[in-house]
Image (cartoon, rainbow, N blue to C red):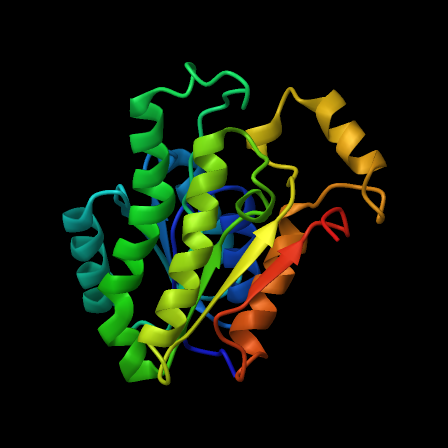
Length: 245
């Protein structure tokens, strides 16, 4: 079903993006792997993907810059001849306690909204015509922060809420050819939470399934939306072990 399709994954070198890329590659999907700063990680992940017997190329682009996104997508189509799947995984935050209102600096808002909202939209817009040709799909990586208002900062939670809204709007705008859904994880064991072991342990204790998510937990749901959910669009699937019920 997915054999031979082409997927562009933003922020694909590490964490959730890497897990999704590897899972798709095992089903015969060729991968276009975007990175902004983590070139070494992207190249390592790219080699792991190639070792699975599919093509993989890396593309450096800051998704918050529309011109870079458009250039990247044009190059992906030139290299592969088509584009079928977009996974908007690139994201960023600044850790600021919610009560520290003055600490939530203007430049932090710009950074976070630039990648998490504008970047998501820019990527979706840039791939829209190609995905319409292939009747493809988009999966956006959101967060339960966008549903709860909690998370690493007020701006981060706001950006993820906006991403959920963009997902729903684009599901209508790109229908019927393109499906657009989102996955909203709780806390995930990635480098974002390194050094926060006590916080993770508390969250795990309060989660019905008794642990926090691994990148592979999120990847499995993203994969199901891509491979098996042909009549699902505009949906936000929470992956948090039951913490947000």
